[in-house]
Length: 306
Image (cartoon, rainbow, N blue to C red; front, side, top):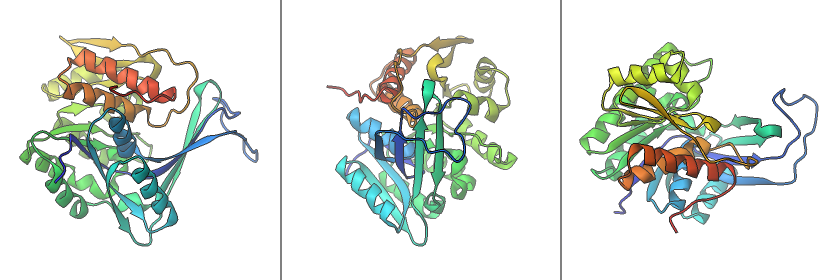
């Protein structure tokens, strides 16, 4: 059986990304056609974006997810095969493969649209046997977009327990926080975070999940709740923040001149971070590498080890 450095699971999408469109922070006007010259069509979603970046960093990553019984699902499979990605994409009948459309406008303003329902068919009955097969004591288990995985929410603790039984390291990035999220789901996500080894949220979702006014306040709260948890908060062009000897430290990212795509930047950061952790880098060095990988992704590059 093939050995993987990292196993991830979650939403599977066809990602369509376009840039240089004529809209700004004021939004997209209705009943108006915005025209662009080019776009990318890629396998996507947090776990697949993460796996694609790791592939470019020469890490072995397995992604487990769902697809619909439709042509879009066939296309996603073909694109994954073309990139030689290791995937277990289970087909659910009568569902639509999820599609995400990310648009970048003026001054790097962006908007994302998503449709589809196959992702919600991923449940513990399907996932746990596959994790049991592939996890091991030198494997990291990456849990992304927990706020979107409705069918798995009640089983986050069971997934982490299995990871612990396999002596795997647990990494959590729960993804975007929407106004419709219930208090029960927030509690489930918080519990999962406190059981993890690494927690890599973005600024807005971090503040809302922990109901704090500042990143520093949240970092200190989590240090009290889970002293061994490594927390790094991604903050876009402001870099990434962590706690060292009770004080918040910040590592700035490289300068980006013109964004190619915003979609997947956080996943690229996470991949760069774990690549560095796997190499035994210190926390500041791992964050620095993560910022470089994310910046390269946003600017259209694809950093590797060569």
